[in-house]
Length: 249
Image (cartoon, rainbow, N blue to C red; front, side, top):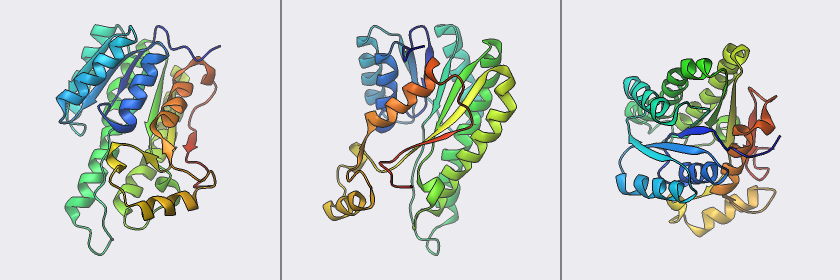
């Protein structure tokens, strides 16, 4: 048993930036061929593909609407044809539209629930039969500690991330007999390009609430993904691994 992903093919949704980018590159570093989806930034996605290929692996980027099931099916079909199979799916695509509940619009609620939760359904359903045909696979869904503990001003985001945890447990029970494992990673506060403009006082407050005393790095989430994608985790399914510095302890 090892953490090597040699011979495995992976798909990371929302893989052009932030945590998704770190996951895609870490999977390639450990030997996997990696495809990513992205919503808008073709330049960023193509740069990730170049970095994947620099590890000597196959890389491919697909522009796709995460909430469109037919597009998810097409992405899965194309990867299966070009890579030969899909061993690992990482559902990472997601958005935030924060507001207090009394000010939150139906649109803000619907957009976050649909993007964050339906996208997980779309790709997990679309990949199920190919993984059954391949006699196994690993699905890794990126949730959040707020899906466990909640957070003021994020009822929509927290609900979507809690939904991912419940979905994953049910999915794992349904498909475990086909050797398909499904697990959740729940990051805490992770530094990405999206958090660069965060007020220093807010960041210090987050550090104070985190037992390890710092924010996390995207690669620390990616390392947990590598573990769940590898043969080192073949007896783990339906679990939620928190990568949060103890925040939700």
